[in-house]
Length: 306
Image 1 (spheres, rainbow, N blue to C red):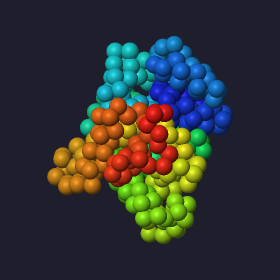
Image 2 (image 1 turned 90 degrees about the vertical axis):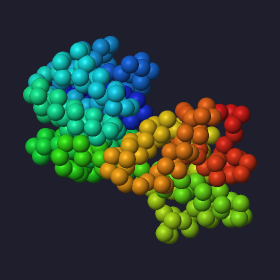
Image 3 (image 1 turned 30 degrees about the vertical axis):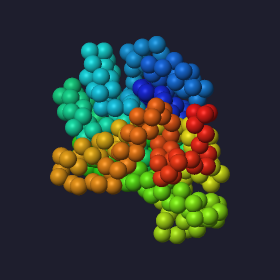
Image 4 (image 1 turned 45 degrees about the vertical axis):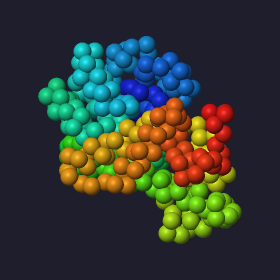
């Protein structure tokens, strides 16, 4: 078993690190949020007041951070991972960030003598808790093989995507497709409701027909259809509008860089921005369903209790 330092113990990091503890690893954690560290301690993670303390003796360092700027700060800062981690540690960044930053971290880690992979995940909070995430690992073959062994307790599937940054590329495209499917579920759920269809009957039809998708099975924006949907809890975030806007923005930026036209992605980005502009940045991204309703009223949403 390994000594693993985990940096970034939020909604994904806490259950993922707990699965490593359950597999017998010694997990040492750090987060700027004391509440996040308290939650991680419940899963058996040892937490420390500084990142340097958490990095002491690390054989593997895993980071799960919100944005590229946070990954750059954690790895490249004066008191960051490249400065403080043991030189033989494997570095695994499971954040969802832009490809350019991922490539920059690969270069910096290599120059500092570290093995590094970009290894974002798909599967959401439910997959993090269940240990069924898909890991998309970009980097050198030998580093990817080492990382695959480490992430197995958290994974349902591990895919080596290729060279540095390709893990992030795969994640960006996958999330773009997810959010477009979520917009389809949002529009479909409201149209079905206004046409008088029983929501359960329609959901069961769509879930075994050509309208099926991960978004329909997991995030369908109608209460009572699927246990993991935020609609069951007044759209309290399982994946916030802020994070969704960040991820779809990465896809749009990639589209500009590659001259790929992404009209559906642009529409979804506008929807997430509408939530943010309304002061609903911390609500679940599936709340975009309310924009399909002419009066903004949808089952499961009570703005007075937001």
